[in-house]
Length: 520
Image (cartoon, rainbow, N blue to C red; front, side, top):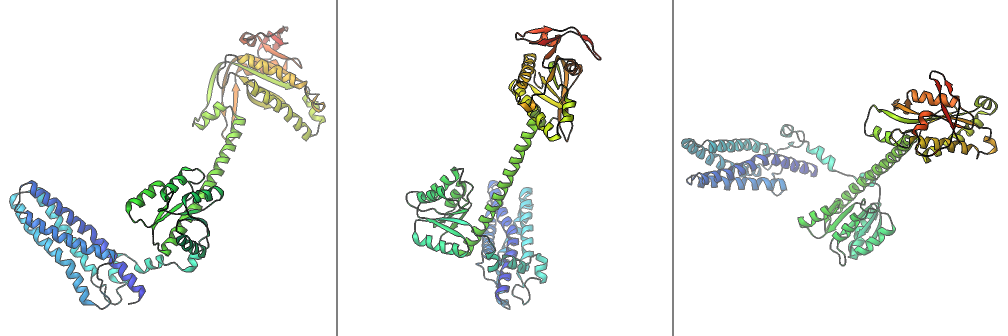
């Protein structure tokens, strides 16, 4: 039999044996349950037969376990004698199980023990299923009974395909990208051997003979993987691993533990401490190569994921910054919290309008780029002043600037903040350079109720509506260049001492005559 067919035959045998495991384990389990119930019911006369079922069940499970582990004798091609022996070995304990179970079933039916009857019936069903599966073992020694045979087709198992999938050529190995690996072991010969193997596979290797030396290497260099021995003096491998995982700079570096300790507790402790894998000494070179390749590939995917997440976070921060530049912070928070409609009514808000006097002639005379630069300088200054006085800029409309105080959160000193902003805006014009010196503005301020909310979906705008807005706009248009004109309502809302200059009543379109005041 060729090596390929030998692998396939053993793979098929293991697959068949695994299918037997479920029924065999069930038989053992029901036998344990039956003897417990019989003793509990005082049916001591049944226990010898039930114990005989247990002996046969343990024998059957042992045979199947050996077959799965590859310890059982599998018939070679044409070895019908060994095939018959395998059938006999599996059927012998099964026959005993069925025989004793049928005897017990008759007895429990006579006693009327319904629960016992149900358990014995289930045990017999598992035994019948197992007997049917045993025949699948027959024919493993027959010529041509490898992948593609009737038996395998019934088993729906492609042993040849499994063999191809498990096979890795040198070309496959050479395609794995090399990494920078730190090998930590206190035994020089071990370090040298592992280093040579890793270098042969295309990796760059740095060695350390102790835990402190390994930590020193990590302080000064970057690594893709650490191979770490457990049994070392001064600082053992688990202690080094704990230090690695406790340090934010190093915790993302994968670690494979290599040790002469084969105990499950040692493996579990390393995995709990953060190790990515564990290999016992002496290690299998093929397995070591596979584990390293797999771990490095996983790290590269994690590195890519981390880079993508960093880009996403940077874009999110950029988007948040843009959003905060357009909308008030409280509105951004409500929007991000999922509010679909943001609209509020405020009973007392102060609105400011500022407009450049004679803007149209200025715009006609200046080049577009020069005009935009001047407007940008002016309105950028106003934005800084609004932030300083804790006033919300609402928008610019051409050469007009609109601000409000008392929204999106009410403020007791809303009128004082707006008036202080208006004065600061006028003072800033006096500090203009020669190029912007011709800009002069009028400012109108009014206090009253408004509705404020967010509109738009693709281009958000936080805006304010109501008669209060209209009156503030008209107070600006009827104002005096270089002065802040306020309404009686705003004067009444002021809390700080301000110097006023009354004006004659102003006739506002759509509102009528209104008493106004100029701020000194």
